[in-house]
Picture (cartoon, one colour):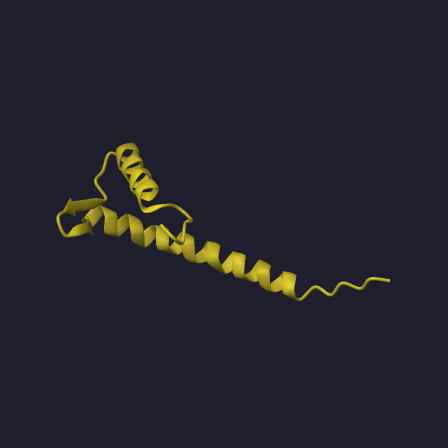
Length: 73
């Protein structure tokens, strides 16, 4: 939730909405918390690749911005 800049309750609602949209339970909810289902694990593995690519692109852009030299005359 913190990484996505969402409150835990907002993230929970988003996950529930995603599960409804997909027609699949991604988590098992019990008194101890949340556990990924098999479908959830597979989905998370595929998304991890997407998130890693996104993080690399963002880091590269930030690095490029740091390398710019501004000369004010």
